[in-house]
Image (cartoon, rainbow, N blue to C red; front, side):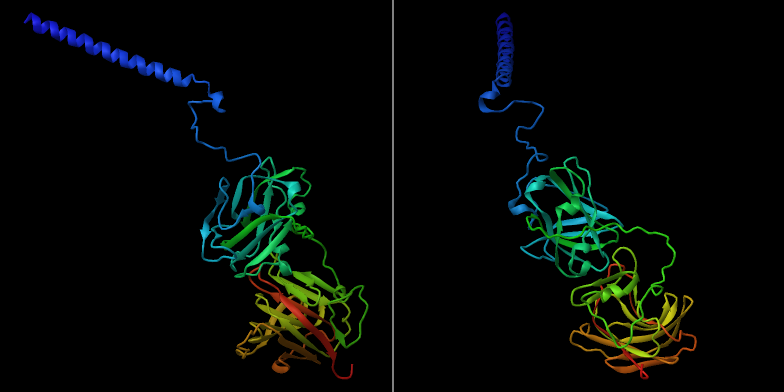
Length: 424
């Protein structure tokens, strides 16, 4: 019994000694490791940080050929969005490569952004990207951010597109000067970009790139609503004689007055339609025809996505005239009598035949006014007639384009002639 007790005490003391020795060895090993001079391998040991973590923000960020997005985001960029769903690798609509960014804007002024880079302002002249919006989105707005992460000058994307507006369902490349995006800001770097819209819808974006293309362009200015007295465009106009032919060179377009909307000389044609983001209608009149009485208007246009094209006659002012309204490439014609701002439809055609092949091209419409009668013409043929006893006896001509979507692409007027009737 004494022997058993002796060996139990001996083995207990040995086990305790072994445990103490093992614990002391581990403690000495850890202390030794934590006290190693890490400078010998070029690092500073910090037990509170992951030694494999990398700093992804700030400083200079190398972009291959200036691309922010090309099939995918470069490693390290931060992506963010608000009230929008973003697929950063969509294959549904692609302008180059295999993928694009699909943006689904769920609310007004929703959007997305990219940051986590620092691009030297002096290294590039412009920002370029390809974009394909649907008809609901309309225009989009882009902003860049300086080194303090402050948003700079918001710019309309459609303003820089060909024709002054985005075309739904079509890829188009937009190039915007950095000077327009940065304005008066003196920062030497750009650290982020964002894209937003005022209407819910879907947009695809691809090939976002900083470039050295100069691409000079007047900056977009946010429209301001102002209450001003009505302007009489005929008050100081010089009367012109018939026949009249609208030229798109020289000062011919300058003799027109646009009450509102988009009305612009495009070099060899005239663009008319809603002003993106501002209104749904464009109304322009020729200032030299206030004394014209009986005449015929012949027009040829390439139809945009704007729903209607109207030819006005006997325009006394913006509230008194008659018009032939054409919709859907001339499928329907209507005559309206506008008296003191009150508009009355005086007649409408049934659905008219149109070409199966590119019906939007070279749409030939016209209007004839003689005495108290107004005639609407399609392809030179009279399709509708009405007698309007209360329209002005004399007056100029006008063009109007309307669509419920303020971002619809404009019509292109390729020909607009006014010929005298009755010996004028």
